Each structure stands twice: as C-alpha cells, then as structure tokens.
Length: 146
Image (cartoon, rainbow, N blue to C red; front, side, top):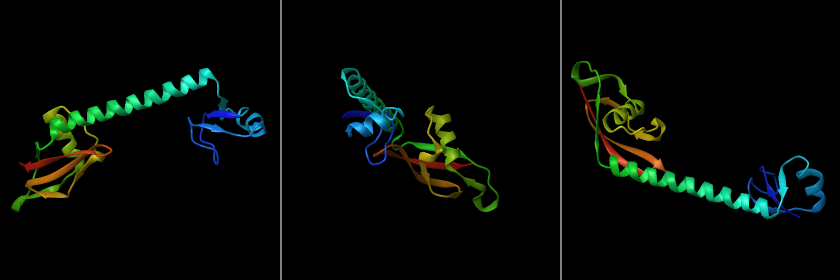
C-alpha cells in the first residue's frame, strides 16, 4: 500500500515522504494513529503543493540573503565604547553590540548568533563575518571608537 507520512516513522521514512508499506502495517498501525494517509489524487496534490511552498520559501530566503549581502559587503560598522587608560575598553564589544550598530546604521536586522566577531577589547578596526544563509555570507569591518 502506498502512503504519505504525516510524521517521521522510524524504519519507514520522514514526514511528507511517499512510501510503500505492507497492508497490515498500514491498516492496523499507521492509518489509525494518524501517522500516514493513503495515496490518492487529493493527497498527491497536497504533497506537491507543500513541496512547492517549501521551495518557494527557500528561494525567498536566498533572495533576501543575497540582497542583504549586497547592502553590507565590505561596509564599515562604527561601534562606540567606553574605555579606560591605555585604550582598553571596559568589558568588550560583543556580537550583540555589533548587531545593534548594524540595525542603527543600515536599518538591517541581523541575528547576533549569525555574526562571527573576534574578541574586541581595544579600539581599532576588526574583521567580522555574517552568515546570512547556508553558503551565503558577507564580510564587514567593525570600527571601535569612543
């Protein structure tokens, strides 16, 4: 019997896959528990629409990541920090501070967890990388000043 899985089933397949299972396993376990639905024209159409929707979402995310990359690639982000004598900062400049500075200066919201910045404890210029999407990243410069 051909089925489309509603949930991951160990030893059979992942959610949304079209699989073959024995009639008894399907009728006595998978269908009553709602783990799968039988394949027919309607369920096949729903499966194709779901896959198309997921692909469209991925395409939109990639396009947005490329747009942000074009806007930020090679730019300099200025971060202000308080410091003591000899130019050493009180604390350090974190990825959260850099993300807030990007939002203020360029009106682009970046998740701080996607920012890779080395430990900044003095004034100066530091390289940073933003991972926007799988395989899409851009490099910026973080300028720390008073």
